[in-house]
Amino acid sequence: MPELTDLLTAAQRAILDAIRNTAAERGVSAYLVGGAVRDWLLGLSAIDDLDFVIEGDAIAFADWLQHHHGGKTTAYAKFGTATWQRDGVTVDLATARRETYPRPAALPIVFPSDLLTDLRRRDFTINAIALSLQNGALIDPLGGKEDLRRGVMRVIHPRSFIDDPTRMLRGARYAARFDFCLEPETQAALAAGLAHLRALSGERVKYDLELIFEERAPEGALQRLRAWGCFQAIGIPVPDDDQLAWRFGRAREALLASEWPIESLHLSPRQILHAIGWAALTYNLGQLAIARWVDWVPFDAHLRDALVDLGPLSSLAAAEFRTRRSRISSLLHKFSGLSLFLAYLFETSKLKRDALLCEWKDWRWVRPVTTGDDLRALGLAPGPAYGRILDRLRCAWLDEEVHSYAEEQSLLATLVEAEQKRDNIGEQGPFV
Image 1 (cartoon, rainbow, N blue to C red):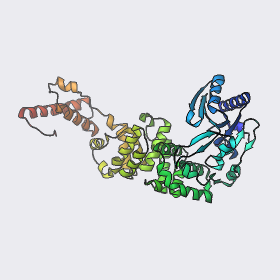
Image 2 (cartoon, rainbow, N blue to C red):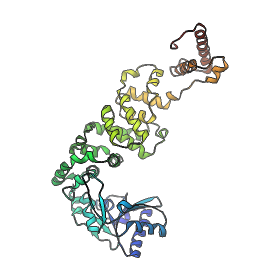
Image 3 (cartoon, rainbow, N blue to C red):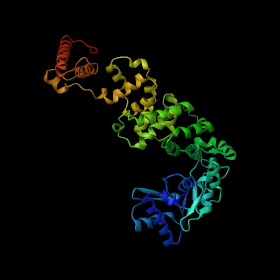
Image 4 (cartoon, rainbow, N blue to C red):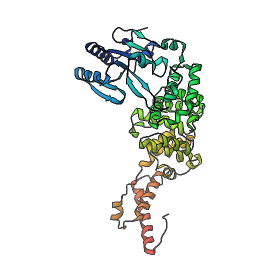
């Protein structure tokens, strides 16, 4: 097995050295814990996250790091934790602690403690392993290393999922990522915690589900959550296993092939992954399913609106797309680029998918050369006629009735003449 430091980038190694040296200078014990140690023991090729436990005041420790080594720190006094950012690396520093839960699914109340107590309050044994920065000793009081060897997920105490039901979401993520299974007592503990899932805040559910959406193959974790009864417990329907597999596979295929102009959505890669995940869970399942998620989870406005729009967008029948371009564009123009993109990913009708892509790439940007100023210059009084004429000209371009400015001008003359006749005889009603 390579040394753990061999798996770190140069910036990560510099961070690790700074924390080790600061701990020695201040006379406190510091430990690398959790995922980094787990992934090293699993023989992975790289370490993504570095989390440290300090037997002492982690916030004061972080302030010392910033003062002597630069970077930026952010403190979270309620939990005795801080983050330190430098050279593109962000690490978490936490005061060794014990915690109590005032009620199931509530955030814990924390108290300073020591490393062994801190490890025993964690979620799974495979995440309760530490590496001393002082002497490199591996500290594994709960048998996490053996569980890694056996490929099992084991909670540390029977009330684990009752105290914090988000551990089910994290457990599914790890189980899918490493192809681990729940050992029997953990399965029983999970069943006991299902009733408390709905008591979680929407923000906590959102955070952990979106971590799942960032995985290489999110469907694996979501399928486990279905099998464990988690979605049934919260009372929100989700697609079956085959649909989940198809949807995420389809999304990967479309992104890899650059089928959609993603940059035109003006969203970050993480926002795109999160939107795909939520749409995969909700597309074509009806407004009730979407409404239940929206009522629970605090989505950003652009994503909330896109998910809500997927209801009517998914209900448009493929037959409605066998018509003129102008008619199709009128069906789709009210939907955002994000909602069109998400529907494009998961729509099974190629006819409909092609229309969604054309609407976003081409059709909705079509405008006649003629403007309102041109109509005013022709002596037409401002009013509803402007909208009728400009819309008719746009439809003519979309439906290829006109192909040049000269042809638009010819049609414009006809339309203006018709409007003037209407005004002269006092005709009312929609323009044809």
